[in-house]
Image (cartoon, rainbow, N blue to C red; front, top):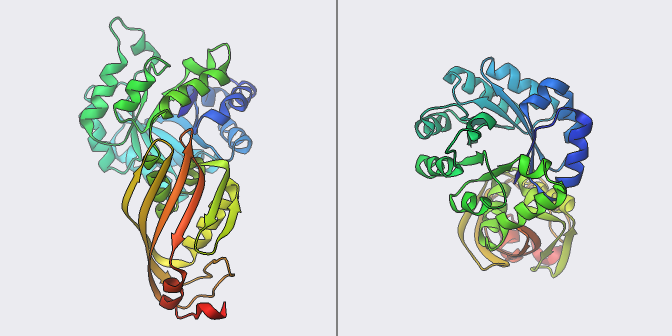
Length: 349
């Protein structure tokens, strides 16, 4: 869920985001806001909400690397480049994203053939495309968000939708397969922005099922995408190592640090997702971790120094999900197998 902050001052942006932050995943700082307040608003919002992704809607048309580099340096996690810009501009922005470990989004506002251009810019390396109808287009007679959703379905690439996302269209956005729903006026123009954001988030995540949430968690862990990983869990998430019978961590920060420690323990790190099943509130997944043990490996019995040995460790995760986020993770693996692969006697731990 992405909120588009189309206000004009940093103070107003902070006031709004402080209200809606619990119900959104991405804070988009609109083009007029950035033009009026400058990139300092990016830094201010990121400082206020470090655990949310900050989206700088630059709509870059030229100098892709330079503009994206400036926004990323200011704290942005995502920036937009116009889909109508030249390929060199888009590739430059993508290069800046790689430099900072951040993402670039191609905004298709004003693009005539959105489907074809969506496929083209995806090949250039953007994280996803924003299929976007601006305020002027939305004001035209006969405008319907269904046109955006149809283009997203046909393009077959990761996409977000912006332009008329509200409580009576959010279900259609989800059903169309959009990766991100972008709501602006439906939130900031509401009498109670927090209640409006909560209603949209609830409608977006209700009956979604737990399996996609566990898949997102697994994919974020595999990619080292810590921002997404943190957004996938609740603030008070509990992680339990069933193999040792102990609660390993409590809280989102501790959960992310634990996964970072595991990932840092291995070079050539890889997570294979074999299968995931679930119902509305619970999911179970079958995974395999592979890598070379090249750093301290955290275990409930203490860290184990690098051995340089290759590990292939099957494990299973069971999670509980509420409101589209993981509240509890139970991790199952065979510690004897893990220890034998790195040449450690588990009886001496």
